[in-house]
Amino acid sequence: MLKLEDLTKSFEATTVLDNISLDLESGETTVILGPSGSGKSTLLRCLNLLETPQSGTLFIEGDLVEFGGKLTDEQVRTIRKHSAMVFQSFNLFPHYTALQNVALAPVLNGKMNKKDANKLASDLLDKVGLGAKKDSYPDNLSGGQQQRVAIARALAVSPDYLLFDEPTSALDPELEAEVIGVLIDLAREKRSLVVVTHNMAFAQKVADRIVFLEGGHVLYNGRPEGFFSSTNERIRRFLNIFE
Ligand code: ADP
Ligand code: MG
Image (cartoon, rainbow, N blue to C red):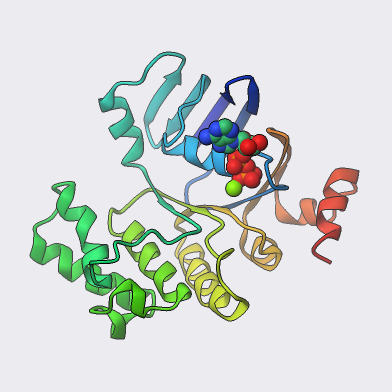
């Protein structure tokens, strides 16, 4: 499981996450919702230490880190190995094929030889529906295909948690549906997913848990049914945008 306690993150004088505590069960899909600037990306980035919180604790699958001072490289490595992030802007290496993009990390982190990594990458590209595109370069793939390569690349390091930061917001609706389809498959396999998205259909149908952030505070944390039927004035105002 993943547990945050009293996590605080600020950028200079601005507190972006204010004493956040959260428990996420493994095998569940958590959807993080909230208006722009509410701290969703920062929260996700704190989970794999792309940002370092000023205080609080993070417990993830048996490893604990207490924030306050400077973290050691060893602490960062230990926490980071539990998760992989998929960004809005796919961030593939343009001079590598789809297969090479996916096979790279397991070789670089010393977990696999090149042959095994290529076999894994090939299987993962099949899994995300890109069996026919293994030798294509990112420039020759649609945005939805590139994002599916990025998902395969995240899966290649066998993370406990997959973190998605608005994975479909750069895509038009048809391509968004392809990527959401892959997320639904992963959720059905009981992968542990933490997804920042504005796709309310996904949140409503697939999430086990909704976390709603506003101004660095958790305004809701619980089952989707309770969120979508909430009478909280701020949550209703947020949901009305999508109706
Ligand atoms: P969201 O993803 O919900 O839109 P973010 O986590 O990106 O929100 O940002 C939350 C707040 O933190 C915003 O006010 C943003 O301007 C600020 N912020 C995010 N990253 C930085 C940074 N590196 N330096 C300074 N301020 C930042
Ligand atoms: Mg964001």
